[in-house]
Length: 403
Image 1 (spheres, rainbow, N blue to C red):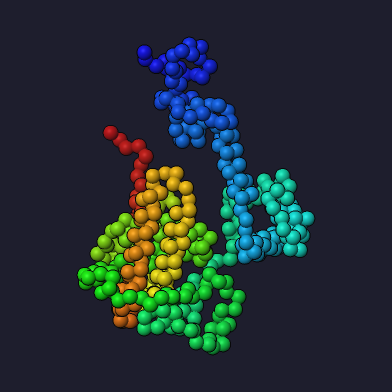
Image 2: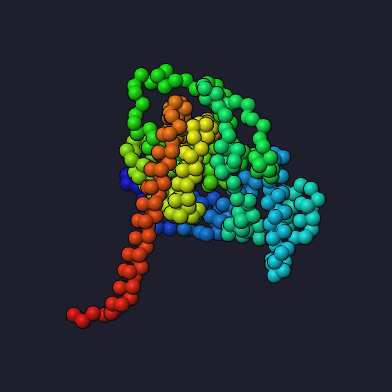
């Protein structure tokens, strides 16, 4: 017997016959799900998002509140958030016109400044509303102190590693380096080198290293610098998320690609940075700035490069642990874990390769990267000029042409 097709769940069709209800949103597909709030029938995620704004906003709000309740921040996280809120409050006080629109009340701020702990539930209804608005418009992110990259520190020029690549005891810094480190947070400190000796490449592979490893290193370093910039230097706050950013930006680690030129490697990285997922960070200008980070790292030489790759290797390992701890709800989990494991091996191999290279390799590679960046900026300037000329010509043309 054929199934009955109805357009409403209140149909009077006999209960003996199986019924298939049409989606209430698109009216095209059979419904497979029911909204738990309004009992509306829908067929897909897209239809769910568009069926009722009240339902979807309520669902997202409940998820956020639930996550806030489940979070158990450590002392370091509390101090960091307290510092952010203090700066946020200080900036509001500097603007006399913003007093009436302050996100947090004076009573709440007095509790925070006195060191008392407050939770989201302690906020008033109006404070909760303004807090959500501040998050939505990115106001709180403006209060976060911009991260100072560790490779820009003078101490990064004095990294000492053993012949086997392991971390040595750092020399006592002079007054200039000491003054430079005062006030810097732990994420701006130079990452430590490997704890165990790096094996020779001949032990890792019987084949000769590919001559394209210099190009692949540029790709990997770019993804590392971009990820640290994105997470304000703190990849530990979301190790798995940081790893996924690395895999999305790096064609070598994420896709197993083999770029043959520095231009090809940088072009792919810039294309990923300008995609919708990361465009809000700064687009092409931000992506070109990350190339300067890569040039700075290359200019520091082998010890800094080994430390950077070791830090990246540690990030991959921590992300892999988080991926294993998650419940395998989707078939993609297995593929993600295998991609992370492969990336971990590649980074370790190229770290051992970097350790064996002479110092002059990096100055030559930095010059090539700098030249490619200059070419990219010139190409961008040409495109802007062409776009401007095209717009000018378009304005000069008549809107209606005689047939």
